[in-house]
Image 1 (cartoon, rainbow, N blue to C red):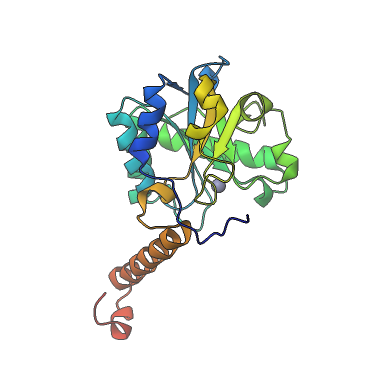
Image 2 (spheres, rainbow, N blue to C red; image 1 turned 135 degrees about the horizontal axis):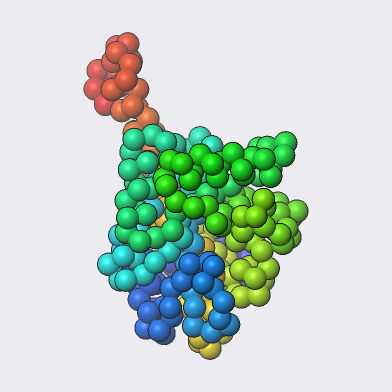
Length: 241
Ligand SMILES: [Zn+2]
C-alpha cells in the first residue's frame, strides 16, 4: 500500500531512539573512527533549518554520553552561522564534545573544489576546528556516487561511510526505508551510519506535515519580531509583535 505523507509518523522521542542503540551496546564514533564492521554507530546531523534544534539534540546526546557529528550550511537562507545566536549555538555544540563541520552545497559553485576550500577556510578560522569531513547538502546522482575526498577533505557519501555500512536517514521526517532499530543490521549489531535532521525530532506534531506547519508558524513569527526590533517604521504596520 502507498504510504501517505499524512499518516501519523512514528519517529517517537529522540531520547528513546538513542537509548535503543545504547541498550544494544553501540559505540558512538566520529566518521574517521568508523573502521569496524560491528558495534559502531556514526551519528550525523545535517542542519538544514535551525541551529537551536541542533543544540537541543546535542544536549540530549551529551547527557547520555553520546558523541555525534554536526554539519552546518555556510550559505543558507534559513540561518547564518556567523550571526551571534547561531555562532553561539555552534560553539556550544562543539564544547559538548561533538564534531562540528560543514554541510556543503556543491552546486552553488562553478568549481566546487575551490568552493569547499573557501568554506573550509572560513569555518576553520571562525570556529577554530579542523575540517576533516563534510556532508553534502541535497547531493545529486553525481555527488552520491563521488567516491573521492574533495581537496583532501572526506565526505559522508564516500563508499566506506555510505555503501560499505548500512545507512539510515530521516530526510523527509520519516524513516523512509524503515527505522534503524527495526533493521536486521541493528539486530545483528552491525555498524550503522544514521542521519538525523533535528527539526523532525524537536518540533512536536503527529506527522511530518504537522511539524512543518508548526515550525513554519514559529519562523514567520520570529521574522516578524526581527523586523519589529530592527526597523522602526515596521511598527507603524504592526503595533506589537
Ligand atoms: Zn541538507
